[in-house]
Image (cartoon, rainbow, N blue to C red):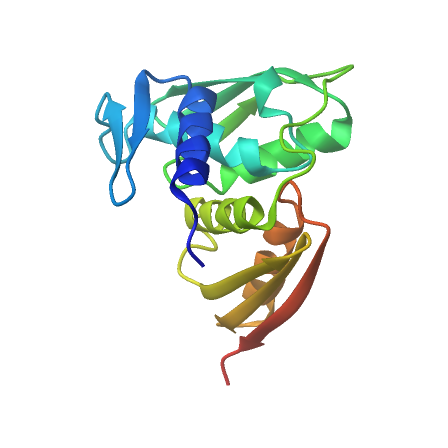
Length: 189
């Protein structure tokens, strides 16, 4: 599936804003460029960027109300969530992001604003699902094909085992905008 330039720019720009790092995105028909500070693999800045990016895509998390701090791979979350369940889910999401050594969840349960992306188009949902799977350490190696139609995401590919297959489906179900998941993942024999 090909994503139009303006949609790509919007996704990249939203990610840059959500990450809280300096930079901007430019787009032409054949070239996408993000300018700003260059991030070193596994640095605290890189970990923070990955955490903030991943949180934007989860339906049960309002990334706009969560502050992320990283020191030597240890992530501290501060802000507000709408429920204890959301607080626990946020910890689990963050623990599985590459480069995270531990999570100190200082989120307070209280009234939270509406989460980002209540209604998204299929191309945006597909892009979000692919991004979240790429960011999750435990799901990155699984080769999947993602197709979205009216918010219903079809996941195809091959997982090593049933646990890995179930993990991918759980991750996809939690992405903002996903109305349902068709599981066409197979397991290796």
